[in-house]
Length: 160
Ligand SMILES: CC(C)(COP(=O)(O)OP(=O)(O)OC[C@H]1O[C@@H](n2cnc3c(N)ncnc32)[C@H](O)[C@@H]1OP(=O)(O)O)[C@@H](O)C(=O)NCCC(=O)NCCS
Image (spheres, protein in one colour):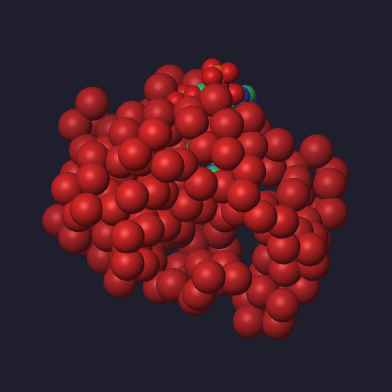
């Protein structure tokens, strides 16, 4: 798979992908508010040069935070490969760990990350209520009909 750094892609294309997946180009997480065009990341394109997988990340000291990960074709190994690209970039930047946040309804992501070396680190109850004040388009109900309410932080220790 050939990944493209997102700064090499037209900004509109990246924004459009974000809006389609997350309702806006802004990510609102307890760790901060992020505009997708300001983030580092990698994308996988299809033959028509459309984005089919995208990961974004940012650095906080010796931590690398994954701010989003989306694959349009689930189960083809794209998510795993994108995570590996971020791990490589994190190591090159001297990071000791990777962290990320998901929501309580995202059972698929919890399974995915835990099978790839991430461990549950912190629960932030009711975090999404605050996020909705800034980003009202966050739905009330998520995967499997579960109310979207809490944030769950996971980490992967790169020294382990
Ligand atoms: C989570 C996600 C990034 C995984 O990407 P992917 O390309 O499907 O991942 P891979 O093909 O590398 O690995 C497949 C794994 O994903 C898991 N998985 C994720 N979503 C799944 C789904 N909807 N249905 C079934 N399995 C799913 C499976 O457990 C499988 O793991 P296993 O084979 O080790 O049991 C992708 O499902 C996705 O984009 N989900 C929606 C957005 C999202 O939730 N992002 C994470 C938010 S922090």
